Length: 199
Image 1 (cartoon, rainbow, N blue to C red):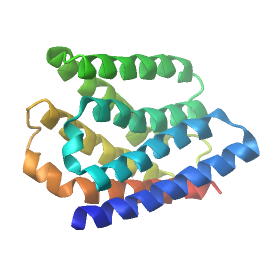
Image 2: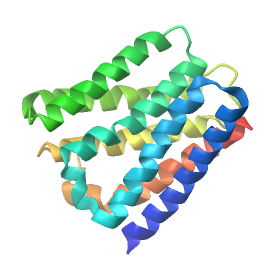
Image 3: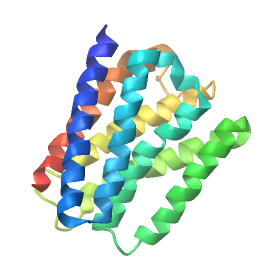
C-alpha cells in the first residue's frame, strides 16, 4: 500500500511537470522543453506501470531500456538550455547510451550491460546533479533540480546493479525495494521545486 501511495503522488507530480513543460513549449517552442517533457512523460508512464504491474517489472530489459529515457531526457534538456557549447556532443552521447542500453539489455549481453548501464546512467545523473549549480541565468532555487539528480543517480545506479545481480555499497535488493518509491516521490518533488522557479 505504501508503494502505491508514493507512486500515485509521484505520478501526480510527473503529470504536473508534463503539463508545465508542454505549456512552456507552446509558448516558446524551445527544444529543451521537449526533452524535459520526454523525461517526465516516461516517469509518469513508468509509475503507472509499477502501480498496475508491480515492482517485479523492473527486472524486464524493456522497462530498463525505456526508463533510461528519464535521466537522458532531463540531462539533454539541461545541456540544451544551459550548456550550448557542448550540447551537440552530449546529444550523441545520449543517443549512443540509449542504444547501448537497449541492445545489451534486450540482447542479453550481460557483460556489456554491466558497463553500459552504470556508465550512461551515471553520467546523465552527474549532469543533472552538477549542471544546475553551474547553469548561468538559472532562477534562484534551481539547485533543487540538482538534488533531484542526486536522488535519481543513486537510485538508478543502485537499481542497475541489482538487475545485474550485484550490490552497490549497502544498497541490497531488499533495501532498494524499500526506499525506491519514496525516493521517486522525493526526486520528483525536488524537480517540481527546481523547475517551477522558471516561471
